[in-house]
Structure formats: C-alpha cells, structure tokens
Amino acid sequence: MNSTERVKNTILGLPVDRQPIYGWVSANLSEEITEKWGSVAAFEDRYEFDLAHIFGGPGSFKKEVLDRIQAENEEMTPDLLLEEDIFTDPDRLEDYADLKAAIDFHKERGRFCYVQTPGFFEQFNGVFGIENQLLYLAMYPDELDELYRRQAEWTVRFADRCIELGADMIHISDDWGAQKDLMFNPRLWWEIIYPHMKRVVDYVHGRGKLVSLHSDGCILKVLDGVEVLGLDLVHPWQESAGMDYDLYLEKYSDKFAILGGVCIQTALGLLDQDALETEIRRVFHKLRGKRWACCTTHFVQDHCSMADLEFAFDLIYKLAREK
Image (cartoon, rainbow, N blue to C red; front, top):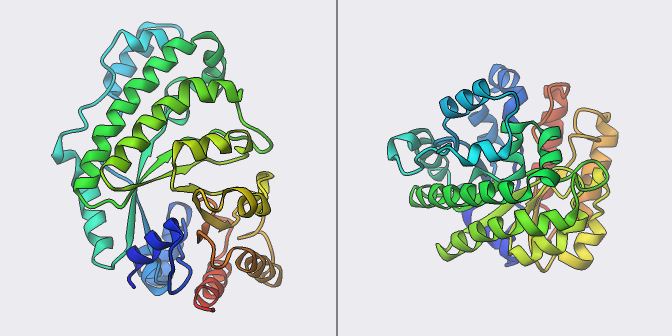
C-alpha cells in the first residue's frame, strides 16, 4: 500500500496498513531543517510523510485592480468590488507550472497530494481586513453573497486545473473560528458561506476527487453544516479550542475524517520531551485506527527546536507503525 492509497483509505474509513503521518513543518523552520537535513524534502523523506500540502497556481484577484480601487476610495467596501472585474483567469495553464512541479515531485514518492485553494470569509479578509469584513457581514450581506458566489465560480475552474494535474484532494482554507466560538453568527454561515462552498464541494466530488476544509479555532456550531456539505476531511479539529476528540468519535467519525492531533498551540515546541511524549501517545491511543491522519494542527512555530521536532516525529513514526 503506497501513501496515496493509505490516505484515501483512511479518509474513507477503509482498512490501512498503518496510520498516515504528515506535518506542516516548512513555513517557519525551513532554514533550520535545511541546515540540518539538507532540505525540507529530505526531512519529509526521512519520516516517510504520506501527504503533501501543495500551494501554487494563480491567485484569485487582480492586484492592480484592487490597488486602484483602494487608491480611489476612502474605504474598500464590497459594493465597490462588484463594479469591477477583480478575478484573474484561472485557466492560464502557464500559471500552474510551480503547482505541477510540486505534484509531480510528490507523486514520484507515492504521496497523496492536496492543493490549497481559498475559501470565502478568509479570502476576503485579505481585501477588507478581518475587522471590516465582520462588520460588512452585517452591513453588506447581499454584496458579500455575490462576491462569494464569484469566488466559488473561480474556485471550481481552479480545481479543474488542479485535478487535471493530478491532485487527489482540493483543500479549502477558510478560517471561521476564534478560540472559543465562531467569529460570526451561524445563521450567516448557512446563508452566505454554505451555498457557495457546497457548489465547490459538489463539483469536485463530481470529478471523483475529495474535498477538505482547513479552519482554525472552534467551529462546533457549524459542524452539522460541515457534515451536510459532504466534506471528506477537516483540519485541524482543534482540541485546544474546545473541540473535544470524544465529540468527533461519538458523532462525526462516520461522517468525515480529521487531520491533526499534534497541537502547535499547546504541545510541540512548548512541552518538555517527557510531557510531549505523553501527549502524543494520548492522541494516538484515542485516534489510532480511526479516520485520522496524524499531523500538526498548523505550521510548526519557530520556537520549536530541531531537537523537539525530531523527537516528536521519531515517536510519531514509531507509533504510526504499531498495531
């Protein structure tokens, strides 16, 4: 069983030979890992990572158009964006060279490749700022609804290109949660996020591929919506934000898989190695054999030493292979 088969079976709840493993190790520790291992790729090979989180391809927005709108107006509001063609052409194959190279590289190693694409709330935070967009959800719900619809149409075309290049799963990044609750009213989620995400999920499923969600924080109030969406996997299922694993096991483990388990907010880089081992073993004891791929809950932070990173993945590598 290669890594792609192992991860697909885990997501679908089918038998596997061992627990899949992965880690978001690159963003903050690339220099340290490269100094020690020669490259991040060498570290990933050493621990036989089963997944590859792929970034690349075109961005959604025409930066020059957004810059002009910003320069011409005191405040960037949703209604202004509706008057312009702000979206790029997602069908320009030359814009996918980096993404294709990454997928080809990881497919040579048999890995399951998932490609990140922007969601809706998170995507427009980059345009408006998170505080403004939270305000605009109340002030401009119809305008945001239309912008999210246009983003969904762009995302469908982007997903098409990624699937043609060999992606196994489309990974929608759309942070909805704060540390203890959603950042907005669940009613708004159902009204102006759910329909457009459903459009993307259904399309990708129609192409025979899987769809996952990344959302930090506590998303308990829309988990039933995640189920209705038909999402195949959720990252990270943030226990440190009040999302207890027992809830997942009791109510949702037959609905979708989870990716995570190694918390960068409370464990990796923060606990001493004895406590870190206890924590990693606790999570394996609870989730082993379930629809779970072991991974960090987000990018490992730069306060994590190489000694602690290697200690954690030495243990993860061992535990993943225990029956």
